[in-house]
Amino acid sequence: MSTVLRGSFILSLALLLGRISGFLRELLLAARFGVSEAADAAVLILTLPDLMVGVLLAGGFNAALVPALKKKNFAARQSLVFVVGVSSFGFLSILALIFFSWPDAVIEAFAPELDITSENGIVSGFRVSLIAFPIAALIGVSVSYLNTVGKFSYAGLSVLIFNITLCGFLIVPDFSKWGVLGFGVAIVAANLFRLTFQLGAMREIILTPLRYVEPVSLEFIRVFLYGIASYALVVGAAVVFRTIHASGGDGELAAFNYANKLFELPAALLVAPVATVFLPLLADNTKMDASEFEGTFLAACGAAWALSFSSGVLGHQFMELIVGLTYGYGSMSETGLESIASVAKIMVLALPAYALFQICSVALNAKMQTLRVFISTVLALMIGLGAAYIFSVFSVENPAAYGFVSFLWSAAIMTLFCLQLRAQALANLGRQLGGSLVMISLVVLIPVALIDAFDDSSKLLNGLGFLVAACLCGLVSLRHIRPLRSIQISTT
Image 1 (cartoon, rainbow, N blue to C red):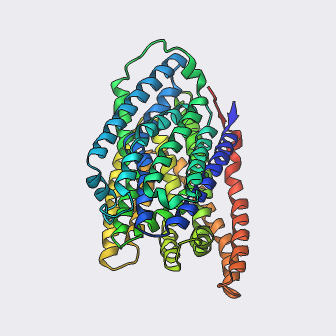
Image 2 (cartoon, helix red, strand yellow):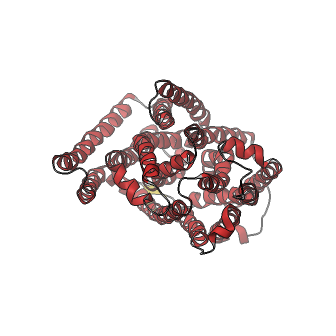
Image 3 (spheres, rainbow, N blue to C red):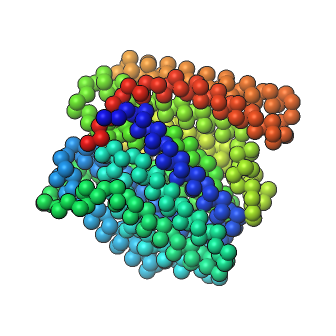
């Protein structure tokens, strides 16, 4: 047995290594391409395999596969992993062949501003990167199994291997000779290395002869499909809003993508570990009564909210400093940095909403109530798109970013009410979230006010203010993290 705090910490550490290497990859990418058409092409072929798995399969993995695996014995788990793995591999292989046959239409749909007739090797690089589609499907299945049996760190470490491979390509001296085509080859190789590492961590299920193949139930398929649909909307929403933002001109797709990375970093390091560890725990809900289930849910919400709200407030107040330190190298211009900062400053306002939405979705998925998650996500996306349109009509800068924020806040509120918590649990949650909101806001405002009183243009002063505010936020968040020490998780 292990505790939620220990599991979350180990996963966070593994994800931190993966994300640090991911930022290094983004830095090298930005330094090589800047904010340009070539950068847009590189971002497209880099993100498309994971996007397709996220849109078409990952929701099913989270909503149906992990809870189902948690309830099965070893032989049944082995059968389910085999069936889902083969099905996912075949489905993504067919999709890759379709995309290979009509690359112009696909590129036009995902990046309409790209000129596919240019000499950057966009179409060739895109076609080569499609080999990664079925590989990414197997990566998703293996991650679900590893999380089910408590091997949380392997997913983050495999991302580290993926990013190191790409970084190695980006620092090759003759990079310009390879261009987008070479980058597509590197993406395929990186996915193969990542999958090999994960399969090595699940030797017990691979080396054991398969005893039987059990057909999946209709209930599993139903839950899987609803999970796919709701998660696809979440993953696809970022792409939709990125595409809207890209209509602003060349390089805007890359600018939104770089800003989104600054959103994803705290989301992945602080929120995802809590959600990932709690999913198999809550999926075993047959051993819990209503009070215990709600208590576990409140503990997860409190920790994820405090950490994400701290990150959101810090990011909003110090975003220019963060963007400058992160992307201010190589071919990146001052205009490009300003564009990234203006978008990221808005997007981080949705971090607390993302945390609440993720924990609520985990709780609903654990109860097999994926239809509620799907309906909430659909309605939230409609609200987000409507908000983006309204902001654009009134000529508000970065309407797509505001639409993204509206989407996540709407999704968080609706999934929370879908849980149908008892009145006392809702009151406890309100006090918990409200208390951390007030305390974190106060501790961030103090160093910000001191900076404004002296010299708000000083990078040194801003850097010191950021460190002080981050330390104070960490101390406040500890109060909401401590309860995770007492919650036990099973590693079987």
